[in-house]
Structures are given as structure tokens and as C-alpha cells.
Length: 167
Image (cartoon, rainbow, N blue to C red; front, side):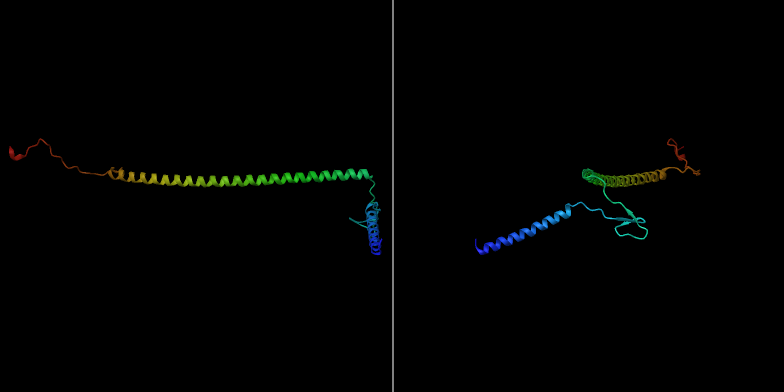
């Protein structure tokens, strides 16, 4: 081996050692069980710093690893169920909003149609009333009044009457 190859191998070995030590120390930090910290209750608050009149609280988790794992699995199932229920609720709300919009548009369309038919009926009734008024006016013109009116009729000449001079 050449001198440069030995230096490269040593550098890799040093880097590799550094990586290994970092990895093992990181794993040790994360894999070590959490040591119980002293927790103090100060009135309605909890803290790791004692206050005047603080009461020490035992915050150790008495469950076994299997119990914690089962609890975490149940929590995850609950979270998944809640997400599914939320998705279903959002879907139903969207559907209800679409149905409400469609119903509102249908009602508006029906209202416009009713207003149009009412306007048409009013126009037709107005025209009918105008015709009736005109016919009443012409009928009233020829009709005798309901109250008494004195009239004098002219005497009519008889067709068989002869003039007086011929006799």
C-alpha cells in the first residue's frame, strides 16, 4: 500500500469511528427509558420547579411496555376512526349544501314562474274588465234608465185614414 492510500484508509476509519460513536450515543439517548422527573403541583398547575406550598406528584407510568403499546394502538385506532368520521361529515355537509343550493334555485324558478303567470292572469283580467266595461257602456247607452222619466209619445197616423178634403 502506498502512503496516500494509508492516509485515506485512516481518514475513513476516523470518520467511521465518529459516525459509529454518534450513532450509538443517539440510540442510547432515545432508547434509554425516560427517568422519572419530579413533578410538583402548585394549586392548579404542574411544574418541574417547586413553588411555595407545592405538593410532589408521582408521575411514573406504572404500565408495562405491552400495556403502553396496546394503549398507543387503541389511540391510533381512535384517531383513524375520528378522521373517517370527519371525512364522512364533510362529505355529508357538502352534499347537503349542494341540495340546499338546488332547492333554493328551484324555489326561485318556481317563484319567477308564479310571478309571470300572475302577471299574465292580471293582464288577461284587466283586458276582460276593459271589454266588459266597454260592452256595459254601449249597453247602458241604449238601455232606459232605472229611474222614472216622463216622455210624451207622438201620435201615429193610421194607415187607412184618408185626408178630409176628399169627402
